[in-house]
Image 1 (tube, rainbow, N blue to C red):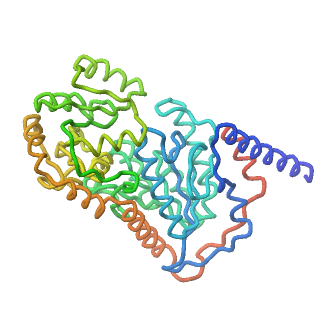
Image 2: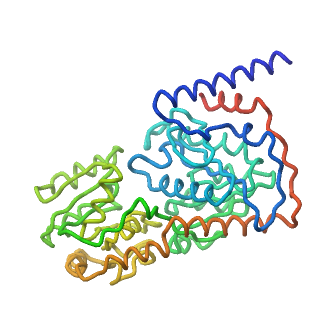
Image 3: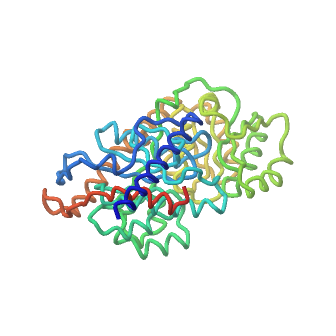
Length: 421
């Protein structure tokens, strides 16, 4: 038995050594990278008080780094949330891709995640969630942002509260899932429109996604071009943006994502034949270039053809002082103040008229709205309130509801073997 434990510890140390070596080779260093066992081995379990700092585990999808290098709205939101919670003094652990950079403690359970859109990414996410939720007993709150995590969260029985943010639209799968687990997982919607789309489940709250105001500089001076930013798909209707720009006789810059087969097919069929000298296409440009274009553009064209649950690019544009011209679907009517920070338009001709009218809108009004409702600080404060309300419903006194046990010293070795590291 003693020899078996020694072998397990040897495997665990070997895995950690290989992982840190791999990160060093690729320049992926994070001084707070550690295991859950290292963090909590000597940490006493505090009792719940409304004013105490919390131990929070945040689970991000494992495919993209937090924050992402290019596309990745969910990952940008998670990065802002995690760093804000850590800055507020909470003990935060982020379960995310190994290339992530964060002020929280980072744990990566899948060292070589599959690309976004790869069928194998589902298996990666399942293993990622299984490994993360095995450690649930070491947190007051687990906050899940993945597609499959709520199913794991419903099986947590040690007193740890599980919060799940629904980042995508309501689908037949998600409706069935939350009919089953809604009484065990605390659901957060990212807009009131998303919440109203399924009134049959209970919500812990509505929290708007935040945008990092510091990395989206305000630009009051506008130039005569329009911008479209998003993935290429039928839901986003990028061809409408081209039509609007041409009718308004203005150039269009398109910052797009076309990495998945369906996106490439839509681009080849619907976008490529419409391109001309008046259209500039940039595939996932660096953040600095993206925000520079967002700030200088006369308006962002957002001609969606589906009930988008939030639409982070709208708040990013407003943070830069740029109005948004959008279809009145999903959360757009909540985000845009019609006639002040943009226009809600039901037809292409209305969008063309809005382009001309956008010259009369004030950039400062756009920035002010982003600061008031969609800042990172506002998002963090709202999630803190959700956490405390959830915990208040679980903890009936200042005494711990569950005595939490120390982790098995060899747990990470077994977990690593299970997820194929």
